[in-house]
Image 1: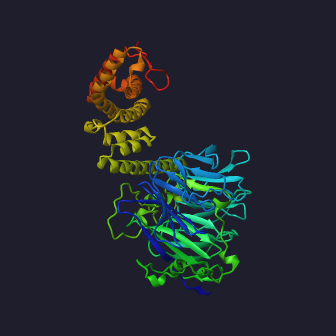
Image 2: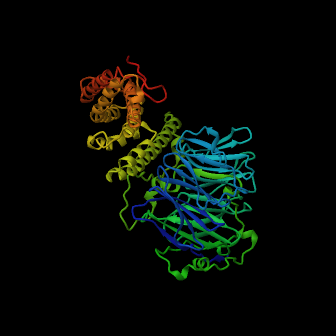
Image 3: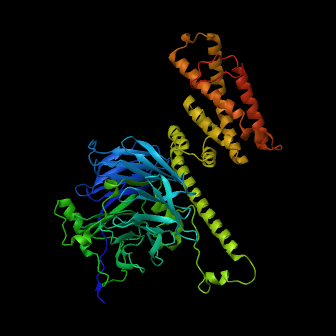
Length: 619
């Protein structure tokens, strides 16, 4: 059998941001040679890698770090998903053309929901709820009638857009694995799914039968796409890109394309007209840097009778002479290779034809960090890892069947289910802890710079009361001096978050953190509020005598009092008061007394209305 000579993915350009930046996601528009990069500052930069090595545009008006990107070359728009749960559209060329603009945006996020958005109306037109854990990947069928979603609960689900109902749910693994990437075949009713167990599975959707599945790979598949004719499948891994033929019962590897180093693949795209495969990669050693690479489709083996070469070593660096495409792009020369249409055809971007695929987190980085960290080659630099999943090796002399056929009378099957549930819970905890650390790191960056407003903005994006308590415990619960710089808006924002914790009635430690924040706010604002009370009492019912500034302060004072009223009646505060004599119990009683005294002093304040002002329930 003939053997084809292996060629490396050639590095075109390296994009480096400031050392303090952490790049979270990237999106390649291979048709227009545009590269979008999102980071934790938070900002998004747009590059034209055909003509420029510097940003052609940059947006920074995001509330939290950018974790997902989708570009749409039809009108130069980029859809940006953030850690705070928002999706923003950035029109980086201010081009208002809408002729070929898709109307559908498909998103999946940590809240386990899959949503369809109308881009022109900027509204959510449907929400699909069935998954139990965060969404890891989504896609929309070529006919736009079906969407598919993958989740860390280990399932993929098909949704019928005609009826807006769940069409089918399929388990990708019985061992706790989950889908890491997926894609519809553009020509057949089939879908390919890469799993955290390092296997690619190929399903027929007419009868939902499993057509084929690959052997176990070295690493988790990070990106997956079909060519235009749906014949070849390109799959990106940590160490290489593989080209598969999945139609057979035994999938065949047509070619193995090593990369220039061991790096996460943030995006993988094909320009079929020009005849190139592009990848955007990020190494662990430089989180502020991404590398754009390419290979000509004419250099890839598509002949199933030709065996691909053995895996060759990957150099750490590549010389300029090894980057001919970069030279062609920079000089504006033709990129047409001598390659047949059948071999170079690629799947048209779903962004330009069928809608957009957008998720609420950077799946390639998180999946690889936690499920595959132990199996990566040793790094030349010390990388700080907060949570690392241990490596579980299967003993070579045991098989699963040996346990299932045990005749001792023990319910092994039930025990195995319990173990699988425990592993699933473990993975969920690992993810939550990772999410918590990313949020707190971003917040503490502003806290260390004495940027109170940005710190509060980060806290406001947090939805989980447990993480809110952690955030407040690191900041305003123990350092009351920062609260002395608060204005009324700051106090209202933090009191709202304290209210969320005390209403949730969770753990004593978290409840204690909340009332510590309330105590610090009362120490600073009680005197201010009493001053406003005296002014209001002196004016009586004649609010016309109050200046606009005095009226604004009074309205905000009313809002603070309204929050204090809710907190004074919260079940979390009552829980601490009902505890035996502890530090938390004594603190809760003192806080309750301080709140009652403040409310008593405000009894005679006339109400200023019902829209947002303090309702005088104590008269």
